[in-house]
Structure formats: C-alpha cells, structure tokens
Image (tube, rainbow, N blue to C red; front, side, top):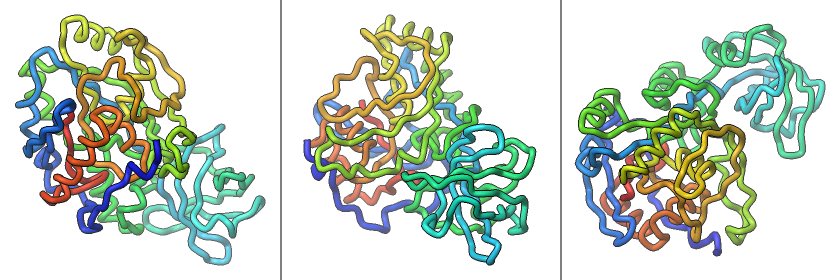
Length: 349
C-alpha cells in the first residue's frame, strides 16, 4: 500500500494547542467499524455506547518529565529529550541542534528556575542523531527529571520553558490512572477519562483491565517510506500481568467486547494475543498494524485523531477501513473537531 493514501488536509487552527477545560467534556465521534456511520457525541457520554460485560483496556504508563533545557559553557542554549537511562547516570537523549555537539563536550542542565542544576558530559554522538550523556549527580533519572524536566509535548504543540504552562501540561498530559513511569509521550486516548467517569462506567457493569506500554518518541515519527511495507517500526517496552490477562480472557469467554483505549493498548493486546486469548508477557514490541492486518482480540477502540502518514493512522485504518477513517476525519474537520494529542476523541465500534 502506498503511504500517500494515509493523507488528509487539516487546517492548522484545528491542531489543539492546549487541553480542553475539562477532560471528559471533549467531543466524541462515534464511528461504525463496518458501515462507516458516524455520530457526534461527547466523551462523558461514552457509556451510552458500552454494555455491561464490556472491558476497557487502559495503558497505565506514566509520562516522565522528559523535556529539559541546558546551556553550553559558551552560554548557548540547549534543549533535549530524555529517551532512556542505559545504565545508572548515563542517559540516551535527543538534542536539538545536535550537529554542534561532539563527544567530550560539557553541558549544564538547568532546573525549572533556569539555574544550573548539574554538569553532564557528552560521551557519544550516534549515527541516528541521539547522544549519550554522563550525568554528574547521584540521583536517579526520574528524580532528576522531576526537578529539571518539562512535559514532553509533541512538536506540533508550541511551548517554551514557561513554568506556568508546564504546570498545566504536567497535570493534563498524563492520564488519571498513570502509575508505571517510563513513557516520553502520553497515551492520549486515555487523557479524556476522569475518575468519576471511570467509576460510573464500572457501576454500569463495564470492567477495566490494565496493560503497560511505555510510549517512545518514535510514535511521532512519520512514515517516510513510499510503501507501508517498507516502514521500519519503532519498538516500545510493554507488559501485561497474569491478573489482567485473566480479566480480558474472562470477558472474551462471556461474549463481552474488548475495547482498547488507544493505539498503544491495541498494539500490546495484539502482540500477546493468540487464538483470541491473551497471554501474560513482557518485552518489546515492534508490531506494525497496517491495512490488511487481521485483529485477534480487539473488538472496539477509543482513539484520538492522528497525523497524516503516521503508523497510528495506519493502525486505525486497519481496524475500520481506510475509506471509513478518511471519511470520518473529513466529517470531523467539517464539524471543527480538535485534532491530535490535546484534541477530541473517536470511538470505533
């Protein structure tokens, strides 16, 4: 399939630059997976489309405050994104303007008050544009990032190092059920849930199961290959334990629907599914779900609106059909829905 088919024209003003006033007041476009019918609703009414015995599968990854700022000894500003800690005190990062950086360089990481926090030494600059930094402090990565870091918003959301804006993003670019630190991007379909909404759904007989997938920076990487089949999918760490696998299998056995909240939950479920059963597992997944893929376990999906030519758009096109998805996106554009991470949501049933 040609990647160009995953294309649509979006007016720039529909790219949401900030979260809505409240999480669950966002709009919800309900899409019929088979017939392509659409219905405009609100997220706090999602229970109208669910049934007792259904199961929502939520990704409980917690977003690290992975965006950081620093300076070179000459005074030049540096902006970076923490990706991983390969060993204690050694970070893998993406640095803006990395062409100016070389092994042996010293940089000073700044705290949220824009004061020097600690030194770091560039150990290596790799071919893929990432750098390895040796952080000269004994604190662990999460503790350091809590002191110096900002929410790692995607590049289409414009932010600087403003602390007031960061305080809002720190709260809203995180699901209310996040508990396993490790992501450098949010599982955005889950941002619409509030604790009261979750409780109402449970009272109505909808059960919950949790998986973990630590969303990586590769989630924003566009597909550059001319053909989808030639795209090299990024890998991300995941886990699902015995208890949550049991919950999902019990729902499936009783005829309930497995409703993946987000493309991240979908990838994990489909990675560990065999013959419509879930196996507890952990590891890394490079599963690339694209049109033509046959789903094993997922019956419905909650998702946001995704970028053109992205692996996420390919996934939802695989689930509901490319023609249905593009027609729904065009409807959303006509109705002035908000798009992308802080935008509105879609329920595919």
